[in-house]
Image 1 (cartoon, rainbow, N blue to C red):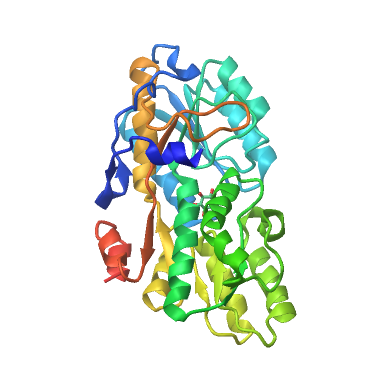
Image 2: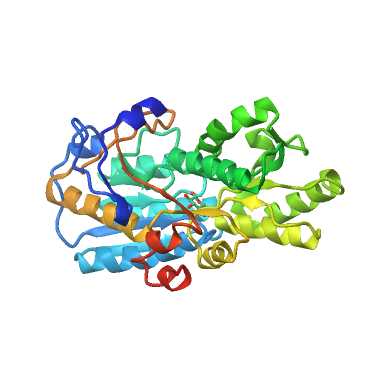
Length: 362
Ligand code: BGC
């Protein structure tokens, strides 16, 4: 599967992080969303967001509201901080209010089957946003940064950061996101594709022994769960040993680990992240967090709204990768954007067009 994605014709506009590719051959009319002929201007668009587990979701809400409404649509944009049942109800409400497109950032990728079927039965188009929905054929499109690639970049950054510290072997601990988020596995598998050879050769040692996805997940993407797990690992396996590196799937969890490391009185390990959160970019600039990932939410929302406009006009949206993201029931036509790794070395360049981060990364 990864080979296919690597050879896919995607056009990267490197400095803006966005892919501005036109639909790849066969990519623009391959989904069930392509059968209808568009819908009335000014229709209702539903956006179902998960919990506010990272800054990107908060920003997405604001951008969706602004971008959809200035394009003339009515909106119903909801967070589901109460959990899966709340998100299910919100989607059902969007369907009964007649939403023409429902954009979904799922809390639990496998728990929306009934509601998405309702959406499809009512004639709406379903776009999975950032997180794939799984085990359902009732999803038309996927728009996201390439999340397997995110994992590969994280794994490689960890190896690079460790190398800068000396020749190893290195003591490293692994961490993954919430198991109900389809992205968590992608991030972890991508990272492990880079780290596994070093673990197998003994160059990387995992003193806790926790190397499998299910052993290293962080329920709900919650900082307190990551911190607790690392408190235990540090006191159990690192009372005399040094912790050289940590694979962290995002910035919020990286900061939680750094808190645990600090309170154990240990030196800062090489640690990865994701999302370019303000506090983490500060930590990168001061040398405490090694890397993050830039997945510019402005670009992702913009692409999602472009797809809504295409659907409005003629009932189908352009995609640029129709072969990489299978959800267990179907391969979902996707528009993938390109994530970028950020360390202290390239932060100023990557964030130069970001009004907030350009002031931090100078
Ligand atoms: C997103 C990440 C985010 C995480 C927690 C994932 O699905 O892709 O960007 O850090 O959710 O909110």
